[in-house]
Length: 486
Ligand code: AMP
Ligand code: MG
Image (cartoon, rainbow, N blue to C red):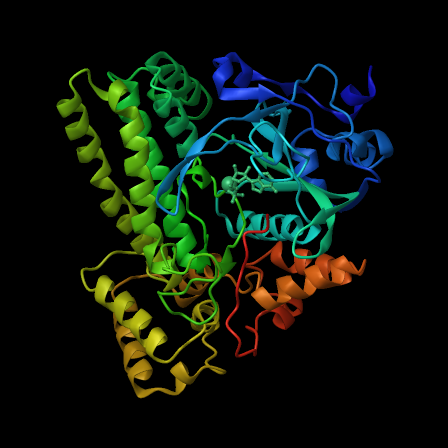
Protein backbone atom coordinates (compact mmCIF):
# COMPACT_ATOMS: atom_id res chain seq x y z
CA UNK A 1 0.00 0.00 0.00
CA UNK A 2 1.26 3.48 -0.81
CA UNK A 3 1.61 6.17 1.84
CA UNK A 4 -1.35 8.02 0.39
CA UNK A 5 -3.51 4.95 0.73
CA UNK A 6 -2.46 4.34 4.32
CA UNK A 7 -3.21 7.97 5.13
CA UNK A 8 -6.66 7.31 3.68
CA UNK A 9 -6.68 9.49 0.59
CA UNK A 10 -9.34 8.28 -1.78
CA UNK A 11 -9.56 11.14 -4.25
CA UNK A 12 -11.74 11.12 -7.33
CA UNK A 13 -12.03 13.70 -10.07
CA UNK A 14 -15.62 13.54 -11.24
CA UNK A 15 -15.59 17.27 -11.99
CA UNK A 16 -13.17 16.56 -14.82
CA UNK A 17 -15.88 14.64 -16.64
CA UNK A 18 -17.45 18.01 -17.38
CA UNK A 19 -16.37 19.77 -20.59
CA UNK A 20 -12.81 21.03 -20.37
CA UNK A 21 -13.94 24.63 -20.37
CA UNK A 22 -15.03 24.27 -16.74
CA UNK A 23 -11.51 23.88 -15.36
CA UNK A 24 -7.80 24.11 -15.99
CA UNK A 25 -5.39 21.44 -14.92
CA UNK A 26 -2.92 23.03 -12.61
CA UNK A 27 -0.59 22.31 -9.72
CA UNK A 28 -0.29 24.01 -6.39
CA UNK A 29 2.97 25.82 -5.83
CA UNK A 30 5.06 23.93 -3.27
CA UNK A 31 5.53 25.51 0.12
CA UNK A 32 9.04 26.47 1.14
CA UNK A 33 8.97 25.39 4.79
CA UNK A 34 5.56 23.85 5.44
CA UNK A 35 4.48 24.07 9.04
CA UNK A 36 1.13 22.74 10.21
CA UNK A 37 -0.44 25.27 12.56
CA UNK A 38 -4.10 24.22 12.76
CA UNK A 39 -5.50 20.77 12.31
CA UNK A 40 -9.04 19.46 12.52
CA UNK A 41 -8.70 15.98 13.91
CA UNK A 42 -12.40 15.10 13.98
CA UNK A 43 -12.94 16.29 10.43
CA UNK A 44 -9.92 14.29 9.27
CA UNK A 45 -11.40 11.20 10.86
CA UNK A 46 -14.81 11.67 9.32
CA UNK A 47 -13.12 12.02 5.93
CA UNK A 48 -11.45 8.65 6.50
CA UNK A 49 -8.00 10.19 6.92
CA UNK A 50 -5.47 9.02 9.47
CA UNK A 51 -4.89 12.12 11.56
CA UNK A 52 -1.57 10.96 12.92
CA UNK A 53 -0.03 10.22 9.53
CA UNK A 54 -1.47 13.35 8.00
CA UNK A 55 0.49 15.37 10.55
CA UNK A 56 3.77 13.74 9.52
CA UNK A 57 5.93 15.04 6.69
CA UNK A 58 4.35 12.94 3.89
CA UNK A 59 0.90 14.11 4.98
CA UNK A 60 1.88 17.74 5.35
CA UNK A 61 3.49 17.67 1.91
CA UNK A 62 0.02 17.07 0.46
CA UNK A 63 -1.72 19.59 2.72
CA UNK A 64 0.79 22.29 1.85
CA UNK A 65 0.65 21.72 -1.89
CA UNK A 66 4.15 20.29 -2.24
CA UNK A 67 2.86 16.95 -3.45
CA UNK A 68 -0.31 15.74 -5.16
CA UNK A 69 -1.66 12.42 -3.88
CA UNK A 70 -1.24 9.55 -6.32
CA UNK A 71 -3.96 9.06 -8.92
CA UNK A 72 -5.34 12.52 -8.30
CA UNK A 73 -5.27 15.42 -10.73
CA UNK A 74 -5.43 18.95 -9.44
CA UNK A 75 -7.46 21.64 -11.15
CA UNK A 76 -8.59 25.23 -10.85
CA UNK A 77 -12.28 25.74 -11.51
CA UNK A 78 -13.66 28.32 -13.91
CA UNK A 79 -16.52 30.53 -12.79
CA UNK A 80 -17.97 33.98 -13.20
CA UNK A 81 -19.86 36.18 -10.80
CA UNK A 82 -21.67 39.38 -10.01
CA UNK A 83 -19.39 41.23 -7.63
CA UNK A 84 -21.27 44.06 -5.94
CA UNK A 85 -23.71 43.89 -8.83
CA UNK A 86 -21.14 43.86 -11.66
CA UNK A 87 -20.60 40.82 -13.82
CA UNK A 88 -17.03 39.50 -14.17
CA UNK A 89 -15.29 36.34 -15.35
CA UNK A 90 -13.36 34.97 -12.39
CA UNK A 91 -12.24 31.42 -11.58
CA UNK A 92 -10.05 29.96 -8.86
CA UNK A 93 -7.32 32.58 -8.79
CA UNK A 94 -5.82 31.31 -5.57
CA UNK A 95 -7.28 27.89 -4.98
CA UNK A 96 -6.48 24.46 -6.32
CA UNK A 97 -8.86 21.54 -6.11
CA UNK A 98 -7.00 18.34 -5.21
CA UNK A 99 -10.01 16.18 -5.92
CA UNK A 100 -13.06 14.74 -4.22
CA UNK A 101 -12.45 12.66 -1.15
CA UNK A 102 -14.79 9.68 -0.83
CA UNK A 103 -15.42 9.12 2.86
CA UNK A 104 -15.87 5.72 4.51
CA UNK A 105 -19.61 6.55 4.59
CA UNK A 106 -19.53 7.01 0.81
CA UNK A 107 -19.92 10.78 0.83
CA UNK A 108 -17.99 13.01 -1.56
CA UNK A 109 -16.19 16.19 -0.45
CA UNK A 110 -14.02 18.61 -2.40
CA UNK A 111 -10.55 19.04 -0.95
CA UNK A 112 -9.23 22.42 -1.94
CA UNK A 113 -6.01 24.23 -1.14
CA UNK A 114 -6.72 27.93 -0.77
CA UNK A 115 -3.69 30.18 -1.15
CA UNK A 116 -1.59 27.64 -3.05
CA UNK A 117 -0.25 29.92 -5.76
CA UNK A 118 -1.18 31.34 -9.13
CA UNK A 119 -3.50 29.69 -11.64
CA UNK A 120 -4.61 30.77 -15.11
CA UNK A 121 -7.46 32.63 -13.38
CA UNK A 122 -5.25 34.69 -11.08
CA UNK A 123 -5.41 37.87 -13.15
CA UNK A 124 -3.19 40.39 -11.32
CA UNK A 125 -3.14 38.44 -8.05
CA UNK A 126 -0.31 36.43 -6.56
CA UNK A 127 -2.48 33.38 -5.84
CA UNK A 128 -1.42 33.41 -2.23
CA UNK A 129 -3.04 33.96 1.11
CA UNK A 130 -1.82 35.34 4.40
CA UNK A 131 -1.92 33.46 7.68
CA UNK A 132 -4.44 35.78 9.39
CA UNK A 133 -7.27 35.48 6.84
CA UNK A 134 -6.80 31.71 6.46
CA UNK A 135 -6.94 31.17 10.21
CA UNK A 136 -9.92 33.49 10.34
CA UNK A 137 -11.77 31.36 7.79
CA UNK A 138 -10.79 28.25 9.74
CA UNK A 139 -12.13 29.68 13.02
CA UNK A 140 -15.38 31.11 11.68
CA UNK A 141 -16.28 28.19 9.43
CA UNK A 142 -15.76 25.73 12.29
CA UNK A 143 -17.82 27.99 14.56
CA UNK A 144 -20.59 28.01 11.96
CA UNK A 145 -20.47 24.24 11.73
CA UNK A 146 -20.76 23.95 15.50
CA UNK A 147 -23.72 26.33 15.41
CA UNK A 148 -25.42 23.87 13.06
CA UNK A 149 -25.16 26.04 9.96
CA UNK A 150 -24.23 24.40 6.65
CA UNK A 151 -20.74 25.52 5.72
CA UNK A 152 -17.50 24.60 4.05
CA UNK A 153 -15.03 23.36 6.67
CA UNK A 154 -11.39 23.82 7.49
CA UNK A 155 -9.28 20.68 7.62
CA UNK A 156 -6.02 22.44 8.34
CA UNK A 157 -3.95 25.57 7.99
CA UNK A 158 -0.32 25.22 6.94
CA UNK A 159 2.18 28.04 6.99
CA UNK A 160 4.15 27.97 3.76
CA UNK A 161 7.30 29.72 4.90
CA UNK A 162 6.81 32.10 1.97
CA UNK A 163 6.03 35.75 2.53
CA UNK A 164 3.00 37.37 0.93
CA UNK A 165 3.20 41.02 0.11
CA UNK A 166 0.21 43.12 1.03
CA UNK A 167 0.40 46.54 2.63
CA UNK A 168 3.24 44.94 4.57
CA UNK A 169 4.95 41.56 4.27
CA UNK A 170 2.86 38.82 5.90
CA UNK A 171 3.35 35.13 6.60
CA UNK A 172 1.93 32.98 3.82
CA UNK A 173 -0.45 30.12 4.56
CA UNK A 174 -2.68 27.58 2.86
CA UNK A 175 -6.14 26.65 4.11
CA UNK A 176 -7.28 23.13 3.30
CA UNK A 177 -10.96 23.66 2.65
CA UNK A 178 -13.52 20.89 2.58
CA UNK A 179 -16.82 21.45 0.78
CA UNK A 180 -19.79 19.46 -0.49
CA UNK A 181 -18.62 21.06 -3.73
CA UNK A 182 -17.34 24.42 -4.90
CA UNK A 183 -20.03 24.83 -7.54
CA UNK A 184 -21.48 28.29 -7.29
CA UNK A 185 -24.20 30.38 -8.86
CA UNK A 186 -21.20 31.88 -10.65
CA UNK A 187 -20.32 28.50 -12.16
CA UNK A 188 -23.70 28.52 -13.91
CA UNK A 189 -23.18 32.13 -14.93
CA UNK A 190 -19.90 31.10 -16.48
CA UNK A 191 -21.62 28.36 -18.48
CA UNK A 192 -24.42 30.71 -19.55
CA UNK A 193 -21.99 33.43 -20.61
CA UNK A 194 -20.28 30.99 -22.94
CA UNK A 195 -23.63 30.51 -24.70
CA UNK A 196 -23.04 26.80 -25.14
CA UNK A 197 -26.28 25.20 -24.01
CA UNK A 198 -24.85 21.69 -24.09
CA UNK A 199 -22.25 22.75 -21.52
CA UNK A 200 -24.90 24.30 -19.32
CA UNK A 201 -26.99 21.16 -19.46
CA UNK A 202 -23.99 19.02 -18.56
CA UNK A 203 -23.28 21.22 -15.57
CA UNK A 204 -26.90 21.11 -14.40
CA UNK A 205 -27.02 17.33 -14.79
CA UNK A 206 -23.76 16.98 -12.90
CA UNK A 207 -25.12 19.13 -10.05
CA UNK A 208 -28.33 17.10 -9.92
CA UNK A 209 -26.34 13.88 -9.74
CA UNK A 210 -24.08 15.20 -7.06
CA UNK A 211 -26.36 17.30 -4.87
CA UNK A 212 -30.00 16.72 -5.76
CA UNK A 213 -30.40 13.16 -7.08
CA UNK A 214 -33.98 13.19 -5.77
CA UNK A 215 -35.07 15.51 -8.61
CA UNK A 216 -33.74 13.33 -11.42
CA UNK A 217 -37.05 11.69 -12.23
CA UNK A 218 -39.15 14.84 -12.06
CA UNK A 219 -41.01 15.90 -15.18
CA UNK A 220 -38.56 18.78 -15.59
CA UNK A 221 -35.62 18.15 -13.23
CA UNK A 222 -34.28 21.70 -13.76
CA UNK A 223 -37.39 23.32 -12.30
CA UNK A 224 -36.95 21.08 -9.29
CA UNK A 225 -33.26 21.83 -9.11
CA UNK A 226 -34.05 25.54 -8.91
CA UNK A 227 -36.79 24.93 -6.33
CA UNK A 228 -34.39 22.93 -4.16
CA UNK A 229 -31.62 25.52 -4.37
CA UNK A 230 -34.10 28.27 -3.46
CA UNK A 231 -35.17 26.25 -0.45
CA UNK A 232 -31.62 25.54 0.75
CA UNK A 233 -30.65 29.18 0.43
CA UNK A 234 -33.80 30.35 2.22
CA UNK A 235 -33.00 27.97 5.05
CA UNK A 236 -29.33 28.96 5.10
CA UNK A 237 -29.83 32.71 5.20
CA UNK A 238 -32.53 32.32 7.88
CA UNK A 239 -29.92 30.49 9.97
CA UNK A 240 -27.45 33.33 9.45
CA UNK A 241 -30.01 35.90 10.54
CA UNK A 242 -30.89 33.90 13.62
CA UNK A 243 -27.33 34.02 14.96
CA UNK A 244 -26.43 37.49 13.68
CA UNK A 245 -23.97 36.30 11.07
CA UNK A 246 -23.09 38.82 8.39
CA UNK A 247 -21.43 37.24 5.38
CA UNK A 248 -20.15 40.52 4.02
CA UNK A 249 -19.55 39.61 0.41
CA UNK A 250 -22.58 37.83 -1.00
CA UNK A 251 -21.44 38.01 -4.60
CA UNK A 252 -22.92 35.32 -6.85
CA UNK A 253 -19.53 33.59 -6.97
CA UNK A 254 -19.75 33.26 -3.19
CA UNK A 255 -23.10 31.46 -3.17
CA UNK A 256 -22.92 27.69 -3.41
CA UNK A 257 -25.43 25.49 -5.18
CA UNK A 258 -25.14 22.94 -2.36
CA UNK A 259 -26.42 25.47 0.19
CA UNK A 260 -23.23 25.69 2.23
CA UNK A 261 -21.89 29.00 3.46
CA UNK A 262 -18.69 29.75 1.56
CA UNK A 263 -15.96 32.36 1.53
CA UNK A 264 -15.21 33.84 4.90
CA UNK A 265 -13.55 37.05 3.77
CA UNK A 266 -15.04 40.07 5.47
CA UNK A 267 -17.72 38.24 7.47
CA UNK A 268 -18.37 38.89 11.15
CA UNK A 269 -21.01 38.39 13.82
CA UNK A 270 -23.12 41.31 14.92
CA UNK A 271 -22.77 42.43 18.53
CA UNK A 272 -25.29 45.23 19.15
CA UNK A 273 -28.50 44.55 17.30
CA UNK A 274 -28.77 46.94 14.39
CA UNK A 275 -30.27 45.68 11.13
CA UNK A 276 -28.07 48.06 9.15
CA UNK A 277 -24.85 46.53 10.48
CA UNK A 278 -22.11 46.10 7.93
CA UNK A 279 -18.48 45.34 8.75
CA UNK A 280 -16.78 45.12 5.39
CA UNK A 281 -14.53 48.04 4.59
CA UNK A 282 -15.30 47.76 0.88
CA UNK A 283 -19.09 47.65 1.28
CA UNK A 284 -19.64 51.37 1.59
CA UNK A 285 -23.23 51.29 0.34
CA UNK A 286 -24.22 48.58 2.81
CA UNK A 287 -25.31 46.30 -0.04
CA UNK A 288 -24.51 43.27 2.10
CA UNK A 289 -25.71 44.65 5.45
CA UNK A 290 -27.43 42.29 7.89
CA UNK A 291 -30.96 43.31 6.94
CA UNK A 292 -30.23 43.01 3.22
CA UNK A 293 -29.02 39.41 3.28
CA UNK A 294 -32.35 37.72 2.43
CA UNK A 295 -33.00 40.19 -0.39
CA UNK A 296 -29.52 39.71 -1.79
CA UNK A 297 -29.90 35.93 -1.66
CA UNK A 298 -33.06 36.33 -3.72
CA UNK A 299 -31.26 38.64 -6.14
CA UNK A 300 -28.49 36.05 -6.54
CA UNK A 301 -31.08 33.34 -7.12
CA UNK A 302 -32.60 35.47 -9.88
CA UNK A 303 -29.19 35.50 -11.55
CA UNK A 304 -29.12 31.70 -11.14
CA UNK A 305 -32.59 31.44 -12.72
CA UNK A 306 -31.44 33.50 -15.71
CA UNK A 307 -28.78 30.94 -16.46
CA UNK A 308 -31.30 28.10 -16.30
CA UNK A 309 -33.88 29.60 -18.66
CA UNK A 310 -32.86 27.49 -21.69
CA UNK A 311 -33.40 24.39 -19.55
CA UNK A 312 -36.73 25.56 -18.16
CA UNK A 313 -38.55 25.81 -21.49
CA UNK A 314 -37.86 26.17 -25.22
CA UNK A 315 -40.13 29.16 -25.27
CA UNK A 316 -38.27 31.97 -23.49
CA UNK A 317 -41.41 33.71 -22.26
CA UNK A 318 -42.70 30.52 -20.72
CA UNK A 319 -39.26 29.91 -19.21
CA UNK A 320 -39.26 33.36 -17.60
CA UNK A 321 -42.74 32.77 -16.15
CA UNK A 322 -41.59 29.50 -14.63
CA UNK A 323 -38.49 31.16 -13.18
CA UNK A 324 -40.51 34.00 -11.69
CA UNK A 325 -43.11 31.72 -10.15
CA UNK A 326 -40.45 29.64 -8.49
CA UNK A 327 -38.40 32.62 -7.36
CA UNK A 328 -41.50 34.15 -5.81
CA UNK A 329 -41.49 31.30 -3.28
CA UNK A 330 -38.17 32.44 -1.79
CA UNK A 331 -39.64 35.14 0.46
CA UNK A 332 -42.26 32.88 2.01
CA UNK A 333 -39.78 30.02 2.42
CA UNK A 334 -37.33 32.36 4.12
CA UNK A 335 -40.04 33.76 6.34
CA UNK A 336 -41.19 30.30 7.37
CA UNK A 337 -37.66 29.19 8.32
CA UNK A 338 -36.97 32.44 10.10
CA UNK A 339 -40.23 32.39 12.07
CA UNK A 340 -39.64 28.79 13.08
CA UNK A 341 -36.14 29.71 14.25
CA UNK A 342 -37.34 32.76 16.14
CA UNK A 343 -40.08 30.78 17.87
CA UNK A 344 -37.45 28.28 18.93
CA UNK A 345 -35.31 31.10 20.26
CA UNK A 346 -38.23 32.27 22.39
CA UNK A 347 -39.16 28.79 23.53
CA UNK A 348 -42.40 28.69 21.54
CA UNK A 349 -43.24 25.28 20.23
CA UNK A 350 -46.58 25.99 18.58
CA UNK A 351 -47.69 28.75 16.21
CA UNK A 352 -49.95 31.69 16.92
CA UNK A 353 -50.99 34.63 14.80
CA UNK A 354 -49.54 37.15 17.25
CA UNK A 355 -46.02 35.64 17.15
CA UNK A 356 -44.97 37.93 14.36
CA UNK A 357 -45.67 41.05 16.39
CA UNK A 358 -44.15 39.58 19.52
CA UNK A 359 -40.90 38.94 17.65
CA UNK A 360 -40.93 42.22 15.77
CA UNK A 361 -41.48 44.15 18.98
CA UNK A 362 -38.61 42.43 20.75
CA UNK A 363 -36.27 43.25 17.87
CA UNK A 364 -37.43 46.84 17.91
CA UNK A 365 -36.76 47.10 21.62
CA UNK A 366 -33.34 45.54 21.16
CA UNK A 367 -32.52 48.06 18.47
CA UNK A 368 -33.83 50.96 20.49
CA UNK A 369 -31.90 49.98 23.62
CA UNK A 370 -28.83 48.92 21.64
CA UNK A 371 -28.87 45.45 23.10
CA UNK A 372 -26.35 42.79 22.24
CA UNK A 373 -28.01 40.31 19.86
CA UNK A 374 -26.51 37.08 21.21
CA UNK A 375 -26.59 38.04 24.87
CA UNK A 376 -30.20 39.15 24.80
CA UNK A 377 -31.28 35.68 23.74
CA UNK A 378 -28.78 34.12 26.13
CA UNK A 379 -30.29 36.10 28.99
CA UNK A 380 -33.81 35.15 27.95
CA UNK A 381 -32.70 31.52 27.97
CA UNK A 382 -31.13 31.76 31.40
CA UNK A 383 -33.80 34.12 32.69
CA UNK A 384 -31.00 36.15 34.13
CA UNK A 385 -31.37 39.78 33.22
CA UNK A 386 -28.25 41.81 33.87
CA UNK A 387 -25.76 43.81 31.83
CA UNK A 388 -28.14 45.31 29.28
CA UNK A 389 -29.97 48.63 29.44
CA UNK A 390 -32.80 46.81 27.68
CA UNK A 391 -33.52 44.75 30.77
CA UNK A 392 -34.02 47.84 32.95
CA UNK A 393 -36.57 49.28 30.57
CA UNK A 394 -40.24 49.29 31.40
CA UNK A 395 -41.23 48.46 27.83
CA UNK A 396 -39.11 45.31 28.10
CA UNK A 397 -40.88 44.26 31.32
CA UNK A 398 -44.14 44.72 29.46
CA UNK A 399 -42.86 42.65 26.53
CA UNK A 400 -41.84 39.85 28.89
CA UNK A 401 -45.33 39.73 30.27
CA UNK A 402 -46.62 39.26 26.74
CA UNK A 403 -44.14 36.42 26.26
CA UNK A 404 -45.38 34.76 29.43
CA UNK A 405 -48.98 35.10 28.29
CA UNK A 406 -48.04 33.63 24.95
CA UNK A 407 -46.28 30.71 26.62
CA UNK A 408 -49.41 29.98 28.56
CA UNK A 409 -50.91 29.00 25.20
CA UNK A 410 -48.72 25.93 24.97
CA UNK A 411 -48.55 22.91 27.18
CA UNK A 412 -44.77 22.49 27.41
CA UNK A 413 -43.20 22.50 30.85
CA UNK A 414 -40.77 25.27 31.67
CA UNK A 415 -38.02 22.66 31.57
CA UNK A 416 -38.85 21.80 27.97
CA UNK A 417 -39.07 25.47 27.04
CA UNK A 418 -35.62 26.14 28.51
CA UNK A 419 -34.20 23.16 26.70
CA UNK A 420 -35.60 24.36 23.38
CA UNK A 421 -34.12 27.79 23.96
CA UNK A 422 -30.73 26.40 24.90
CA UNK A 423 -30.63 24.44 21.69
CA UNK A 424 -31.29 27.55 19.60
CA UNK A 425 -29.59 30.40 21.41
CA UNK A 426 -25.83 30.08 21.36
CA UNK A 427 -24.12 31.06 24.58
CA UNK A 428 -21.01 32.02 22.61
CA UNK A 429 -20.26 33.23 19.11
CA UNK A 430 -16.87 34.17 17.67
CA UNK A 431 -16.70 37.66 19.12
CA UNK A 432 -14.75 39.92 16.83
CA UNK A 433 -12.22 41.08 19.40
CA UNK A 434 -11.63 37.50 20.55
CA UNK A 435 -10.97 36.39 16.98
CA UNK A 436 -8.61 39.31 16.39
CA UNK A 437 -6.81 38.60 19.66
CA UNK A 438 -6.28 34.95 18.68
CA UNK A 439 -5.03 35.94 15.23
CA UNK A 440 -2.64 38.56 16.54
CA UNK A 441 -1.17 36.07 19.02
CA UNK A 442 -0.87 33.38 16.32
CA UNK A 443 1.15 35.79 14.16
CA UNK A 444 3.62 35.87 17.04
CA UNK A 445 3.66 32.06 17.42
CA UNK A 446 1.53 32.23 20.54
CA UNK A 447 -1.15 29.62 19.97
CA UNK A 448 -2.93 29.34 23.32
CA UNK A 449 -5.61 31.99 22.57
CA UNK A 450 -6.39 30.31 19.23
CA UNK A 451 -6.76 26.87 20.79
CA UNK A 452 -8.84 28.16 23.69
CA UNK A 453 -11.11 30.01 21.30
CA UNK A 454 -11.57 26.93 19.11
CA UNK A 455 -12.36 24.86 22.18
CA UNK A 456 -15.00 27.33 23.30
CA UNK A 457 -16.63 27.68 19.90
CA UNK A 458 -16.90 23.92 19.48
CA UNK A 459 -19.92 23.75 21.79
CA UNK A 460 -21.83 27.00 21.42
CA UNK A 461 -24.94 25.61 23.11
CA UNK A 462 -23.13 24.13 26.12
CA UNK A 463 -23.63 27.07 28.48
CA UNK A 464 -20.57 25.91 30.38
CA UNK A 465 -18.78 28.02 32.96
CA UNK A 466 -15.56 28.22 30.97
CA UNK A 467 -17.44 29.99 28.18
CA UNK A 468 -18.24 32.97 30.36
CA UNK A 469 -14.97 34.65 29.49
CA UNK A 470 -16.03 34.67 25.83
CA UNK A 471 -19.49 36.15 25.99
CA UNK A 472 -18.74 39.84 26.23
CA UNK A 473 -18.64 42.02 23.16
CA UNK A 474 -15.69 44.34 22.80
CA UNK A 475 -15.77 47.44 24.97
CA UNK A 476 -14.06 49.41 22.20
CA UNK A 477 -16.01 52.33 20.82
CA UNK A 478 -14.25 52.11 17.46
CA UNK A 479 -16.50 50.33 14.93
CA UNK A 480 -15.19 46.94 13.87
CA UNK A 481 -13.99 46.75 10.26
CA UNK A 482 -13.22 43.69 8.16
CA UNK A 483 -11.18 43.31 5.00
CA UNK A 484 -11.39 40.90 2.10
CA UNK A 485 -8.12 39.22 3.06
CA UNK A 486 -6.67 38.84 -0.40
P1 AMP B 1 -13.04 36.29 -3.17
O1 AMP B 1 -13.12 37.73 -2.79
O2 AMP B 1 -12.18 35.48 -2.26
O3 AMP B 1 -14.37 35.67 -3.42
O4 AMP B 1 -12.25 36.25 -4.55
C1 AMP B 1 -12.78 36.79 -5.73
C2 AMP B 1 -11.92 36.38 -6.89
O5 AMP B 1 -10.61 36.91 -6.78
C3 AMP B 1 -11.75 34.87 -7.05
O6 AMP B 1 -11.71 34.61 -8.42
C4 AMP B 1 -10.42 34.63 -6.39
O7 AMP B 1 -9.82 33.44 -6.87
C5 AMP B 1 -9.64 35.87 -6.82
N1 AMP B 1 -8.54 36.17 -5.88
C6 AMP B 1 -8.66 36.60 -4.61
N2 AMP B 1 -7.45 36.78 -4.06
C7 AMP B 1 -6.53 36.46 -4.98
C8 AMP B 1 -5.09 36.43 -5.02
N3 AMP B 1 -4.34 36.80 -3.98
N4 AMP B 1 -4.52 36.02 -6.17
C9 AMP B 1 -5.25 35.67 -7.23
N5 AMP B 1 -6.58 35.68 -7.27
C10 AMP B 1 -7.23 36.06 -6.15
MG1 MG C 1 -14.93 33.77 -3.46
